Image 1: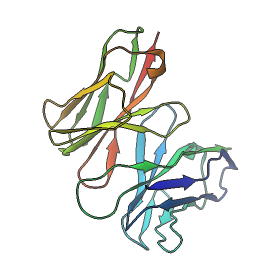
Image 2 (image 1 turned 180 degrees about the vertical axis):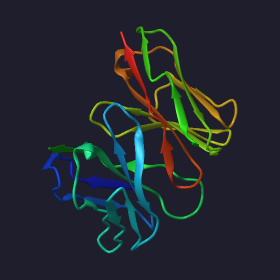
Image 3 (image 1 turned 135 degrees about the horizontal axis):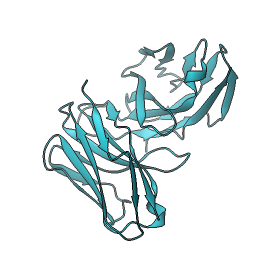
Length: 115
Length: 110
């Protein structure tokens, strides 16, 4: 079945540092790929997504590129802020048509950014 | 703004006392989901509705039920909460592959 593997962390960075959170996946066909962010005590917020190979999703300074050849969707940000402290989930939904939109999540990565 | 709303944000119940959590959406999405999330874990899908069609995950306990009276509303009923059911419950909606989540309801079982 489909699976997502991501850096489990925790990751601790200083403000303005460069962030990479690795995410790789196993799935048949061409899944859609997502990064969700969860702030303490809150629900999940969609951060960015990509639906086909070589697509780059971006939002709020975060970027991730859908790499079919390496089955990866690594999250990057050039300069993190204290307000980026949260848990980040990489996830996918199956490719193809039909009505199967079940999300498969990675285990999440806790990011703490210190001033 | 179109959104997913969950009420209440915090719910306290007693062991064995039935509890209902609610979710509403203004996105007019045809699919609605309920997830359970325990501390430091990824959300776990309990069930989802595709329009009026109910789809239960194989490992969802019978203690958990759901109702969707119309497109906008969906309810999660826990018939006899146990201590192990204390968690964050997340509602999500989608039309297509992208799911949008509500803020969650934190359930405490005493």
